[in-house]
Length: 224
Image (tube, rainbow, N blue to C red):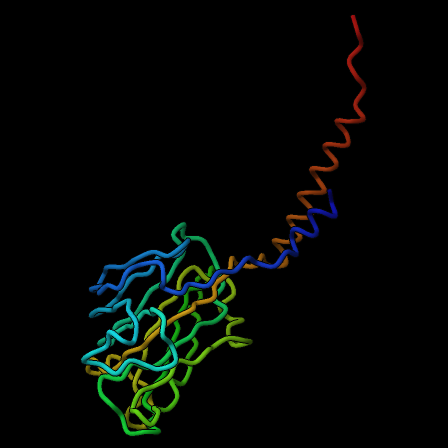
C-alpha cells in the first residue's frame, strides 16, 4: 500500500487540449462566454468569436489553421479558469496576431500576452512575439510551449490578450482596437502537487497502514 501511495504521488498530471471545436460558430460580447470540458471561458472587452478563417471578412485572419479557433478582437481579452475553480497548469497553445487590415510583408506588430493568477496569489506574466506578416499581409499560427510555461504550473486562472508595438519599443494595450489575437489548442493539465503535498500524501498513507495493522493485530473479543 505504501508503494502504491508513493507511485500515486508521482503520477504525471492528466492533460487535455482545448481546441474550441465543441461549440458552434458564435460571437461573444463583453462578459459572455462558453465552456469546454472542465474549463470556462469569459470575454473581457469588446467582443470575440469562435469560427474558422474562412469566416473572416472585415479582418485578416491568420493562416496555418483550417479548424475552428477563438479570435479576440478590438483590444479584448479572454479569461480561462476551471469550472470548479480548481488549480491547473498551462502547458502551451497555438496563437497568432489577427490583423485589422493587410500589413506589408515582413511587418512585426505586436505580442501575445498571458497574465495568470497563481494559487499563492502571485501574478505570473508571459509574452510571445507574434511574428512577421507573410506575403499576403496575414500572420501565421505558431506553437508556443516548453520551459517558458514552467511558471504557469499551479494557477487558478489566466487571461490572454494582444498588445501592439509603439513608440520607444513598448507594447501597448489598449491600442485603438488594433490589438487582436487568435488562439487554439490550449494544452492544460491538473496542477502537479507541490513536493510538500506529495510527502504529506505518502505520510498519510503510512499512517493509514499503521492503523490498519494495529486493527488486524488486536485480540479478538472473548467468547461468552
